[in-house]
Image 1 (cartoon, rainbow, N blue to C red):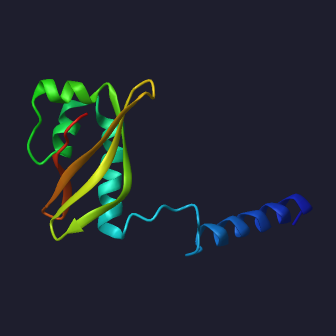
Image 2 (cartoon, rainbow, N blue to C red; image 1 turned 135 degrees about the horizontal axis):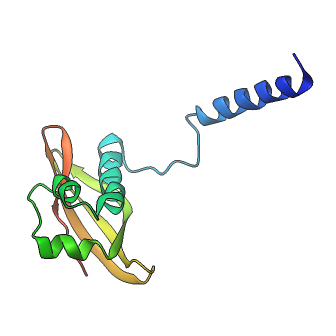
Length: 125
């Protein structure tokens, strides 16, 4: 094995070991698996907000076309850990305009349907 190959193997092993550590400080604690699923739902909304079907799939009740259109011009960030209580949850969400201008924080509610979290209420500032 060449010296370059050996170095590559050592680096890959080091990356694997560091990435598999349970003490990885790069991870954000969302209060457990359910909180993480809710945080991913909000993060995914930022990715799908221009697709009306995917937006509708993110909500427990399909938002009106006008409400769905409002989402297109905003970006959403979870603030803190979601408060999960069985099949319902709430969380503070920071809303920004597309250009990064803060609009404010609002409390969203979520509900679990058939083992999948959905946005129940997403008021905007």
